[in-house]
Amino acid sequence: TCGWWEARVPRSPTTDGPATWPPPGRSPSSDFRRERSLWRRSRRSSSTPTPTRERCGSWRDRRLTEPWFPQGGGSVADRREGPIRVALIGYGLAGAVFHGPLVSSTPGMALTTIVTSDPERRARASGNHPDAVVLTDVEALWERSAEHDLVVVATPNRFHVPLGLAALEAGLPVVIDKPMAPTAEEGRRLRIAASERDLFLTVFQNRRWDGDLLTVRRLIAKEAFGPIVRFESRFERWRPAVREGAWRERGDPEEAGGLLFDLGSHLIDQAVGLFGPPLTVYAEVDRRRPGAEVDDDTFVALEHGDGVRSHLWMSVLAAIRGPRMRVLGLRAAYEKYGLDGQEEALGEGSSPDDPAWGREPPDRWGRLSTGDDVRTVETEPGDYPEFYRRVVTSLRDGEPPPVDPDEAIAVLEIIEAALESARTKSVIAVG
Image 1: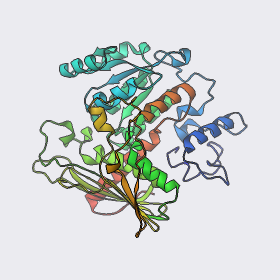
Image 2: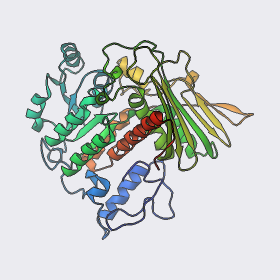
Image 3: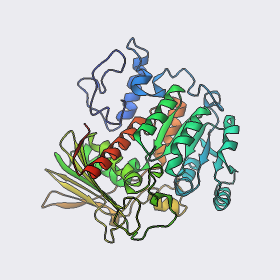
Image 4: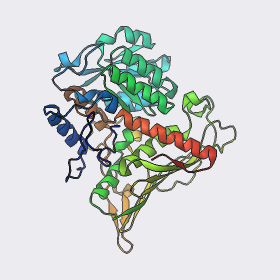
């Protein structure tokens, strides 16, 4: 597969796939996705066979002289001077706090349509985005598919797959909020549907651009830790009572509720992005609150191929929170408390266009210790807007999507292994 660890685990040349990346003798840079894209372009003009769709499932591996939008609604390829017209389905937390503001602030995009059946949310959507048409059902959107260039699915998890498939059937590229699907198999259905129609598909994994994660990436690139022994990462909250009526609290597997799907999608994606795919998965997936139908206190351990172990915690029963991240190496350790502030800023109505966007005050910075020496490390600015900037360059210029669908499917496979581990009380081999 073509995943976000492709640069870590190079493939050998084959008759139906790309030669290895990076080329022999080269190490991947911190911006390997862009380098890999330029390398692929050069290969398209050579005699080396183009990667097959069966191997990569990737719309972008065809010549850039072909239209990116070969079927369905309005073609951006024919309107390269105009904005990408975005339809947003869903206006709850994901739609109102994340996708709406981020799309609206992205150069080259226009939020033209919002779909929500809830009267209060329709009123809020109209107030927040007065230039957008607000529809009450998706059928009205499909009837107007020619007026749109991209669909964003920001609904409860159970609707991700049917709405994503419907959008692809209408000939529209798709962004789906995480988790991509309730199961890895359904995620593969989406990827195959996009591949068969040669359409763009990506998954909103915004926490790849958390400031703390970007800081850890920077420190790893500088070899600040030496050989890394363990990576610890937490999303902890204090919510000891079950929220009645909340879909994330429902035990129906189709809902993909609970913390493992909600927060684990982020924590696993971050860990694998740093250290590559795991060889083994161990998990404790528990329901602790009275009346709970879904997991509310969960631990996942990943053993990566290079020997690093990731320990990931997610809980709503933490009245005192642990460090958000901790990295332990043979040379140094890093510790960081507090969540990235971008979600809070978006919820308060702050604009991603603010020059200070994503920056943390010094009292929230982490610490790097070599034992005797402890120093404060400035947190890299968080950058959720980067996701949609990359969507624009993907659709306009054929650059790689911000999140490859295979990467999101791999996260779902790890979640399924974690559930199996918890059920059998055993370590599951996945590598």
